[in-house]
Amino acid sequence: MILILGGTTEGRIAAETLEEAGKPFYYSTKGSEQEVTLHNGIRLQGAMDAIDLEGFCRKHDIRLLIDAAHPFAQQLHETVEEVADKLSLIVLRYEHIFTQRYDDDITWCDDYDDAIRQIKGQEIYKLLALTGVQSIGKLQPLWQESACCYFRILDRDSSREIARRQCFPEEHLFYYHAGEDERSLMQQLRPEAILIKESGLSGGFVQKVEAVLELGIRIFALCCPPTPGTFLPVDGPHGLRRRVEQILPDFYPLHTGLTTDTYACATAVAAIWDIFNITHQTRPGVFPVILPNGETIMVPVEAQKEFPRSDSFNGNWMLESEASAIKDAGDDPDITNGMQIKAHIGLTFRMDDHLELGPETDDYNIIIAGGEGVGIVTKPGLGLEVGAPAINATPRRMIEKNVKTFLEQFGLPKQSGPVVVTISVPGGEEIARRTFNPRLGVEGGISIIGTSGIVKPFSTEAFINSIRKSMEVARATGSPLVVISSGAKSERYIKARYPDLPAQAFVHYGNFIGETLKLAAELGMPRITLGVMMGKAVKLAEGNLDTHSKKVTMNKEFLQGLIREAGCGEETATAAGQMNLARELWDIIPSEQLPGFCRVLIEYCHRCCDPLLPDGELTILLINENGTIHT
Image (tube, rainbow, N blue to C red; front, side):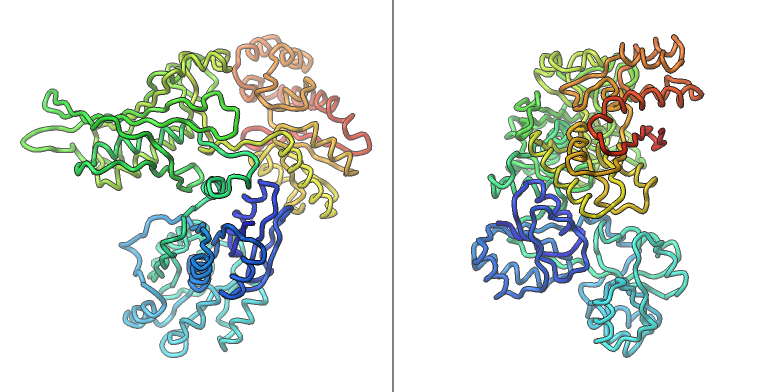
């Protein structure tokens, strides 16, 4: 069994990540305020000291601890370390994602005693503390002796009780509410300074700092205390799941993998390491990669085969290096699984009397190119220039970010000379012939199209079971309406239409529209709203209740028939026959004809879906890429 500790944002995400396994685990929080829906997890409440925690772990055969508590919960970290050491348990530490330190604008404090000393030393007489209710007692020498202090705390009874026990004046308490503007309270109080914790992205550290700096208020910040060195760090759901898969291989029925762009980032970083590793230390077997969601994971790279090359020409130096990795797509049936991913790095320097990097610029000049096995775009409509390598926007940004981060770590000044990153996939041209690439206008290799950096496999049975559980929870809320959509993007747009529905009333169907509607009928749900974007809608309209691209592709002839039926004209139908992606329809169909086409498309979707919900009312919403909804 696995035990998660900590009622934080990270704790909730950890619980949601373990839920994907469909197996039981424990989730322990000190209080009961946090709302989290668990299908398989077992909720525990109340603080545990070392004796309690050890007894619980022994009784329930805990094999892995996940410490997801707040970074400043030092007592809990120490308790977990003590018990883990005694029972020989592995601890995963779910850390916050931290950002830049703002060293020039912040007075950093080692701990609360140091904060008191520095605040008194700078003669601050009016202070706003955004450090939580537990810090009231720790800062007592300030608010009792030298400063008028205000505390912003959570708006809940347990927080008010803690403040009362410290005899803190209630009129100096202010309450945090989600989504509020950080500036409003500061403008109201106009403190001389604020005190905050180094809490990372989930704690809103950047927003707090930027709001304070904008108002010209001084900032004191408590440095995040170190966690025990024996803990294995993760800072996001993907890294957490991959660590659990490694430690307890049987916990998840299917294992995740990494996308081609993640390996491209890792090999690019490794090649840069080779160039700047002037001491010729042994290269690490893994390198850090920052994923699009901000978390960092470690990615294996093949052993170094040769040291970087250097050549001089026309008074310049060219430094080159190459690294490679073997793609592991986990248990997903990915056609590129097992292929070699390579990154070649080329850096140009100017040579005069000594090595010069060239004039300073605002940023690194990073050029991303496609090498062997990476396709070339030959048709418009893919969001890339014709003639460009088929590396989509998200992978490009991901490679650029990781390369820039690593160059900064090596202290390389920003310069006008380019850093050329060439991604290659040997054998990619042959593999691509077995994909939809030729039909989409990508020739000569594969496309690099990752969005999350992770390959997350789901068996059909497991995914449908997760839909069933979500639908059962939705029904249990008593909501008059349940909204089903393909994923987070479409759900975000629909939520604005139904702001009063509980969060559990929104369910993701992925590609299984038919199965989800059958479940709705089986569970007796009277009203269902189906949100669908254009790509899935044109497949659904033809009668395809499973819209996965591996099972069904867009039928242009059928689509042209719908366009003619809607009276959009032959010119529009011809243009639709030449497009690559269904979302291009939003631009192809004239705006004045869009409502008519949408009505026809939705009508055909109803013909397919209504029989699956014979006793219920079905509403279908067609969602544009910018969030516009057609009914």
